[in-house]
Image 1 (cartoon, rainbow, N blue to C red):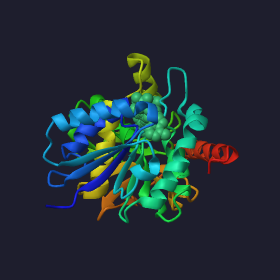
Image 2: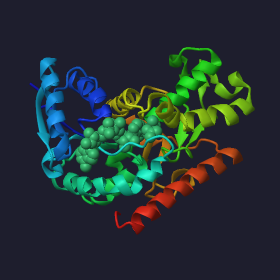
Image 3: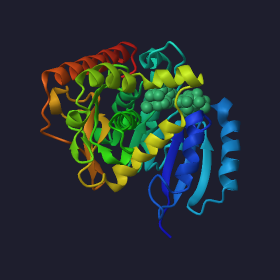
Image 4: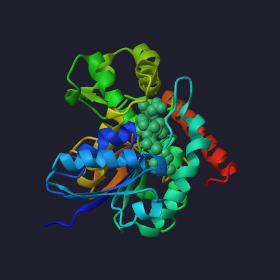
Length: 328
Ligand SMILES: NC(=O)C1=CN([C@@H]2O[C@H](COP(=O)(O)OP(=O)(O)OC[C@H]3O[C@@H](n4cnc5c(N)ncnc54)[C@H](O)[C@@H]3O)[C@@H](O)[C@H]2O)C=CC1
Ligand SMILES: O=C([O-])CC(=O)C(=O)O
């Protein structure tokens, strides 16, 4: 029997946790032959609720689920972690921007970074979902100096999927015929959803859509503000779609992206596309042999440059703000 992969999920009793854990336990995160051991982290007052979820997980009798442990201490929860899904954090409510959560949530990710540094397996991969995700990933990575920074990602995949869906609707094709959108920058309203290199049915999406005004005035704001629109409609932030995106992100990271296709990943910049080194920024990326590579050499026109720079400036502001708060 293959050794189970340790998957640590924080915020296990939350709404994303509930949408995520059953899929992880069923084998959809890593593959149908890979047993998983779940290590759930919650705050003490939510441990009982996490225990309830664990009972339900047991009741599913998933053949790949090798065990479930529940913790309220990050050091124990991250001991031996191979894959960490850092979901646990406060969500925003109506009228808030994700950056309003910096002070409330930033403090969670330093101690978790330290715990990852202390106990993670050599192949650890961490995906930060809790908002503001990019800067939280920066904080966690800064507290884990022994773990390569590129093992810390933040999630842009939900924005990426939203962009694919909106483009497919506009083009009147199934989503499977659309590929290679890009979400640049921050997971915030200032992200830049870019279709300049996207394809619809193998042809240029820009040519198929043939409507710059729609792209700039409808597509970009619809994708960038979709999280707020869901909160407005549901009274709660996106949960199942966020869990779905986290599953896809990690599955691609570990098993590779399909040939000819890229996705959007927030990872520490290596200076590509003029993004200052170290900022956890959304880029187009392909995964091969368990590691992401930023897609290089894409042409960036003046409009895109401006939009990317605005989003990067916000990432710099957030980095400065958490530095000021003593969190970095
Ligand atoms: N990156 C993305 O695309 C998305 C990010 N999010 C973010 O994900 C986060 C979680 O969202 P929901 O599950 O809807 O929230 P929720 O409030 O339903 O659940 C959050 C859970 O985290 C737990 N938690 C809080 N502090 C913790 C800590 N220090 N350690 C472990 N657990 C802790 C809470 O007890 C709670 O059970 C929010 O910050 C939300 O904004 C949500 C959707 C998409
Ligand atoms: O908008 C929010 O606060 C939750 C989130 O990150 C998203 O749905 O993209």
